[in-house]
Amino acid sequence: MGRLLGLDYGRKRIGVAITDPMGIIAQPFETWQGLSRREAIEQVKEVVEGFEVVTVVLGLPLALSGNKSKMTREVEGFADVLRAAIDVPVVFWDERLSSVASHKAMHAMTLKPSRDKGQVDRIAASLQLQAYLEFQNSSKTSTSQEAN
Image (cartoon, rainbow, N blue to C red; front, top):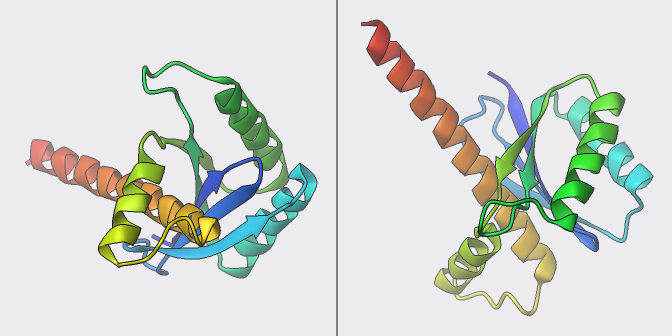
């Protein structure tokens, strides 16, 4: 399958997660802070090339109602520029409540989210990417079961 890269895009920080080479398990990778859009695109390009990433999964920040917000449009613009800069697919994944789940995960690990916002973003990216992987795997399983 190959590695997937997950991005939790924010104006101040971008949480980054990556899968194992088989594309099965997502793990927190890095947090990029204070980058311009151009610099962020360059960082993504480096990771995509260096780790042989086959797909980039970009968290899409929809409102709880499912409607688009100003941030949704900003992320969509980032995705457009990113797609033009790299040769792998860039797909969206609904990131609603991923930060809440990240905070809960950190509390379960007895970590304080307020002390390391970068870690919150890395974990959020990892949770989003893992959810995407699980959805893809369940889609493949149900498709193969229907064929039988």
